[in-house]
Amino acid sequence: MGSTSATLVKRQKEARAAAAREERSAEELIAGRRHDQVVERCDAMIDLMAALFGVPSREIRRVGRTGNDISRLRQIAMYVAHVVFRLSMREVGRGFGRDRTTVLYACHTVEDLRDDAEFDRIVALAERVAIAAFRDRLEG
Image (cartoon, rainbow, N blue to C red; front, side, top):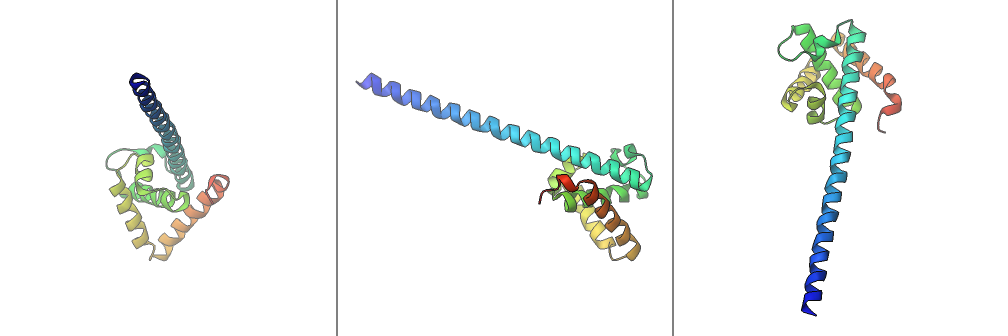
């Protein structure tokens, strides 16, 4: 009888381990889908900003230092992706191939510069265009 009990305990442990593996696998699948969605939205935001301001999207995507105008445009795109898509700083960073602290700096910079009426008009335009372009995909 002791061996039957030991076998039952062993099977229960194996079943729990299998369930835990399946749960982790499902979580990884969901996380992978979310990551793909974030990258897709950030890529679309970059393309939208490039079209809106007549700049090649590869310039906005460029790794490393770029000119001030391109950097500012990238900062606006990061800010709009964060605000309109409701993505975390970490997610925006992943989508733009940057660190989350870079996104944090970009968002603070854009917020500070919005005191200037012309700059605020540009950011508001980018927000409206993003909302209109992604209306069907925005989480409500």
